[in-house]
Image (cartoon, rainbow, N blue to C red; front, top):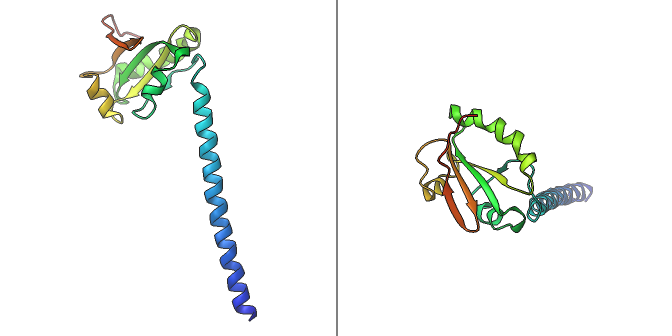
Amino acid sequence: SPLSSKVHKEGQQKIMISRLSTRTVLIAAAAFAGARATEIGKPHSAVIPLTTKNFDDYLADPANGLWLLKFYAPWCGHCKSLAPVLDKVAPHLAGKMAVGKIDCTVEKSLCKKFNVRGYPTVKYYRDGTFEDYHLGRDA
């Protein structure tokens, strides 16, 4: 009947739209993942947000063997003061030192692993070794 045919077509359209949406999301996710993957292997010219999921991959990247890591909390005044300074110097350090930031309010397991007890905590990383930064933290 025309009515059942119309309902059937509308049902097909909904399924097609649903499939299109899923397909679009998958393509967008793949493009995003590809964009992140292209950052590996190239010197970084911006501060890189590091997470539990990407931390090991970024630090293992041979194009960025030396890192300055800032463990911070978004509400921390000293952290807020340091952020624009790191953003400004990161392009000048590209190819020499990468700069990463770890939000300890989100990445609690990473901050616990590195004994972060105050903010900002700054560490260096090179060749599998983490070292504490013991000098001043004034911006």
